[in-house]
Length: 326
Image (cartoon, rainbow, N blue to C red; front, side, top):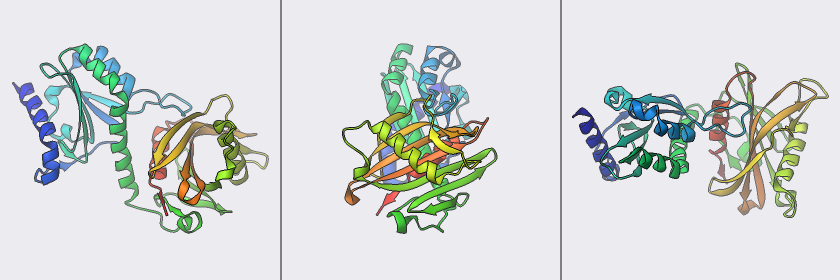
């Protein structure tokens, strides 16, 4: 009976979510939770079987571009009978319900807390649920990723570094916290860095004319050549003969995305320090700024040996995606 009432409540909230958002009459408490940690509400039997495997295949898939396997999200399984009270306040929740409901994926905001993203997957059989998970994998990951990016940016905005000339020199603004400092500003190239316990996280900002990219040449090779030439000049190594290069043994991955409503090329890979024992992940964004007839390049990279790097790279992504063009 308790499970039935819980399911009925969730379905009622999903069906009434739009009306509640318009009226703003429903009051929910503040959400909580560690970034990139998802509460998975599912029966133990389903979690330990093929349904659980399909969930892990999607939400715990390894992130491309890191030197070691790290999952997109960390998950905590919660049996439905204990999903109540403070447990419902996690910012990201995946709920699996097997029973009389037709197979479907429903995504709602601020169901039990605010801000919050809840994904409800229903089906009459295990096969129905697994199919919904697989068919909607990209949509599910995007929903949770978008919520976490917004939360990370909200936290960054609590303490912004405002003592910089990026907007004046490069014609765009970008939000980064006071923990970062401008390590170098030269020839309209900005190197921004933050010291962490095991190393540093870093951002490179600069612009390129359209002529820097040749239409008939390999795009990935051109991007790597440009980033290597810029970083060799502006990122010092531990010795005079050390300089940053792109790791050849780990093929960079190129994809398309949208940043600040502009088409963007995203390149992920591993950097290495020539003549020194240093390396780490990088993500390079080349934004097509048609209004100003140029490419805006923002690159994040981390040096954090012997520790997980997912959350460091996630922070850099959140900073990059805060960009606003003039």
